[in-house]
Length: 521
Image 1 (cartoon, helix red, strand yellow):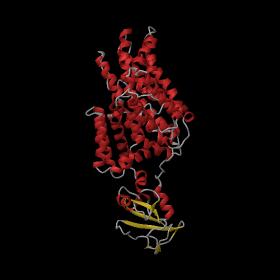
Image 2: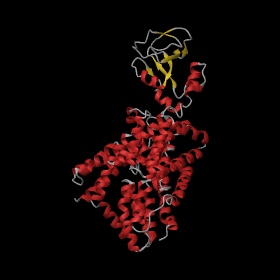
Image 3: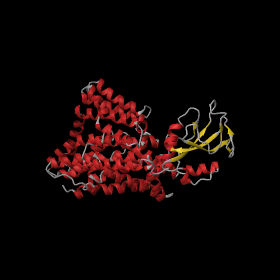
Image 4: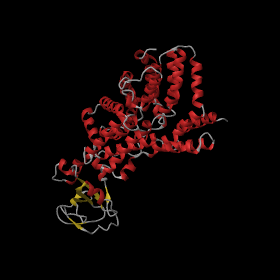
């Protein structure tokens, strides 16, 4: 078999394995890279190059930035503000969430916006009593629509704009994309509001963070404390519950409320045994006793990593939700703003902006190195890195060119609208399997050649390719954003196409019928 045939076989096998959904997606992605090397389609360097690709590094850095926003209480504050505005209304919840991600995407691109807002969406789902699976996929799909609101929404916009300039028809303006981006964003939100509840699964992920927004009130009631909620937990100080485990050396120690612990930076607020308060007097600790400790958040984090006690709720998790805009929030927002400006102006490559922001979050004390490492979704990073090898093979083997040539033969002399339809089908199909940026790079030369053959303007053809490339809704591997919501939403491979199909049709109608209205042939 020649290289293109092997590439098509590997592509078919990957799709089958993803649909089968029995193997971890990261293992499949690694298998793709190894298969393309083993069959001689790619050299070892090319097969593994995706794992060091700037896009992969950029995605990993965005997870760190997102973790910093979450750790500093920024996402809790955003979620709190949104929850206060949406109340119990599902419609408001969808509209506010998707509107916010669309606007943020226009500034920093799809992956950055989704990474930043996934924690917010999970918090909002928990606080409104809804399944995260009802909100996270609309978040990702809203970002895809929002990518067409401005030039900076996605690298594809930049590529297409440069291609238009090279073709002699002039580049697209910064907000010119909004001519199709606004109706697409409104249309996507409307479809999700009307049909999303029936088309999305009611599924919970394997693990979901508990809601600590009312934790202070819960502790005051449980321990009958004479404290105000805003005094029990502040930006600097917090509380934590610990349990004396079996065989703890603390069993037998004498303690009382108000006592300072041996570390010197924590105070005992209350002691309970069997759920009952032991009173203000001295208590001899026994296995199973619960202590409520107060101190600085830093002291709680450092002192409770002790085998002699079991922590009920990790102070770090409590602080993230219970103290909106906590310590480091201002720093995190400044770093985020700097990254947005760098991305919007193109002052540095996206990977540089993302890695720089991630490093600053650590150097300025918003995150520790360990927190940054835990914040990265390594499944997503490995999956994207492995799938890049397939994009490379599609181009280098000539498989993508064969598909494009077949399209030109099919369209023939049917007219410019038929050309747009053919380009939409090709771009949309490829875009479900490989990155939309790689898809655009494959299709753009064919689109320009076909436009020249038909003697039509390149602008509507290129804009149709842009819209088509953004219509990546049917599979989790279509875009990194789709992958980012897979684990926290508890989604399976087959969940995406149910809501994605009507959105794909909407994008097709816009690409074929609305684009020529604004950019004439």
